[in-house]
Amino acid sequence: MILNQITIPCLDYSASVAFYEALGMVQIVEAPPRYARFESADGSGATLSLHTVSATVSASVGSGTVIYFDHPSADALDTHVEELKAQGLIFDSEPTDES
View 1 (cartoon, rainbow, N blue to C red):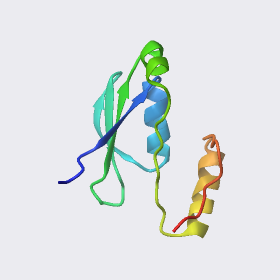
View 2: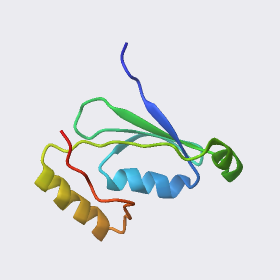
View 3: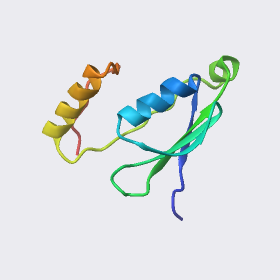
View 4: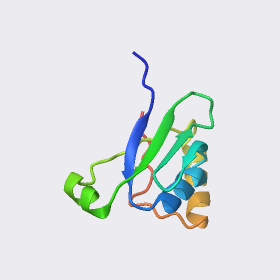
């Protein structure tokens, strides 16, 4: 079995698209305001999709989505996070180096 994609809910299509583009994801499907799909810029074939939901649906489902991104270098990750912060992205927590 091969993982095709992961789809996550979003409330604000434009803000969500801008966020994943700022992370370096490449948008490969654009169907505003309902759906967007991205692939990893590293050529791994990994994809992530956004599906717009209403605030009512979002509240009933809860917010349990967690996404993990890897970076080949801890030092480069720290630099990349600082660059994203300079673009205005807000992080709930700092990156954690894990094996």
